[in-house]
Amino acid sequence: MLKLYNTLSRKKEVFKPLKDKRVGLYTCGPTVYWYAHIGNLRTYIFEDILKRVLEYNGYKVKHVMNITDVGHLASDADTGEDKIEKGAKREKKTVWEIARFYTKAFKRDIKQLNIKPPDIWVKATDTIKDQINLIKILEKKGFTYVIEDGVYFDTSKLKSYGRLWGKKKKKLKAGARVEMVPGKRNSTDFALWKFSPKGVKRQMEWKSPWGIGFPGWHTECVVMGVKNLGIPFDIHCGGIDHIEIHHTNEIAQAEAAYGKLLARYWLHGEFLVLKKGKMAKSKGNIITLKDLIQRGFDPLAYRYFCLNAHYRSKLFFSWEALRGAQNSLENLYEKIREIRENYSSNSISRNLSSVRTYSKKFLNLINDDLNIPQALALMWKLIKDKKVPSSEKYKLLLDFDKIFGLNIEKIKKLKIPKKIKELVEEREKYRKEHYFKKADEIRKKIEALGYRVEDTEEGPRINLLKS
Ligand code: AMP
Ligand code: ZN
Image (tube, rainbow, N blue to C red; front, side):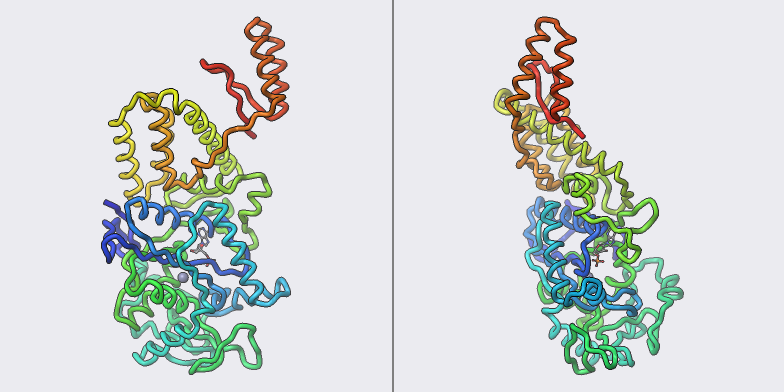
């Protein structure tokens, strides 16, 4: 039984898909005007875990992710510059070049983090016609009004507006967006279509029944979701910042146009934060995956770092904490190498009941609203458990890694250079003859070359020296 926390009901609910073993999943994708920062990437890791858990439970997932290449304005109050245009000015490139470049960078990032790509990528600029059609439906049903700046959705016309807010509703309505576009009727109203500024030719603009312009960001996601997954679909995800505005406005449009709830389960990932607060491109304090790699981190160490916190808890980033995650990951790889080395020697003794217990516990944890931190703890318990034979251990670890995605299967056997092997042999000789001082000198030499030697019951074991 898979349980997921649904922001709509503010409860953990038993997940039941619309069609027996199929799941339609929509995750809000990147706005491609700059590199994704590691906060954004935390959200994509959480969504990847969700997808893997669904698959682990036997569901066939159809995953759609959009690429926002137009219409996402610098401010959520429908004011400010289009982020893609801003990027184009900054880099003296066309908007199309910017979108292409950062889409590619994003795809590279998620690959490095071992995030499974969606089944369908959709670009906002490829669905303009459908977006105009949605606005036409909304207009026909009386939910829109036109002002100088564009076509707006009148939130006062929809009784259920704000259903994703829960108890915060009243407070939000009163004090929500202070910045107001002149002519906007309610502070919560939002742009469906923005007109190109008078006398200005935007690089991205389209004709519409209301005038030349471009779509609003919240309209894009409804269209791309419904077009590929139907309505309602099963799960819609994003970061918690999307609850108040973006997802609220997606739900409102779908309900007004089609009289249906857009998606049945709404899952939101908490933020990654810096000690000094929010990481934001506008604040100029962003850290990218490239920054991590340049400092010598393995991208999967960042993935491991994220797995250590539940997706609904804030995660504080620091370089020291990331270093800790990298050490743990290296340690894990080392342990797995050892387990693999012992693989054939003791694969005869089977202890199936303990294997079943671990499997069951693991499933219960991941199915309890993705309790990945505890599932990781269970993995470490298994590694240390002397009662489980190495062969069974290894199989279980591979199975767990279907969720963790730490590439356990791909861990390479360490290639020890000949020189190191010779030094280790020499040290062994001295040790056996009780020349411990000499043996110690050689150990230091080995370490200076980046390796470490550990004396075990089966003889010396060589490993990479950890940073
Ligand atoms: P954007 O490219 O700005 O549309 O954001 C992409 C995704 O990252 C969205 O799902 C956001 O909710 C999410 N997000 C933005 N900032 C953070 C953060 N600091 N931590 C976690 N997720 C974030
Ligand atoms: Zn979206």
